Length: 168
Image (spheres, rainbow, N blue to C red):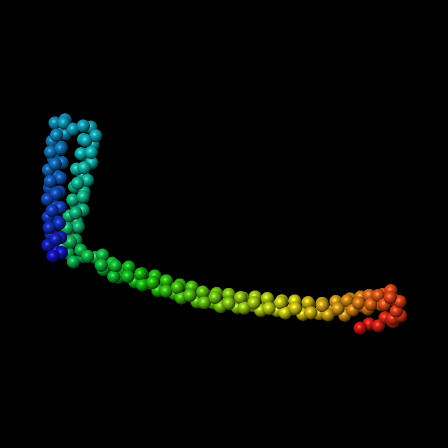
């Protein structure tokens, strides 16, 4: 199927090129008779060599198509591109594994940091409770108890009672 399709395409292109050559020849005759505008004459001068150059390139492609080299793209893909794609895929897999390992390490580090912060908060809270407890005991023993004793003595003296100051 492919071979016959290719042959039909090649024949169709050859026929179309013949039609283009005929039209360019007619235009050239019209130009010699002075029937074409200046810009059309310039365009015609460019089209004729371009059509010949294109058809020469097409003939080269036709020659290649008749040989076994007509699908060298598959050979190039298989021998040159595929190994490079494999190398790129291998490097991407290595990169992906590295990123995955880094992510795991990063999560472990973040977990340790979070645990350390929680421990620091608990330590600060317990330390704060100790400070409050000792501060309260200090306040009661060294400040409030002596004030209470002095207050009681003053109260007793105001009532006319004789008391001696005795700390509690």
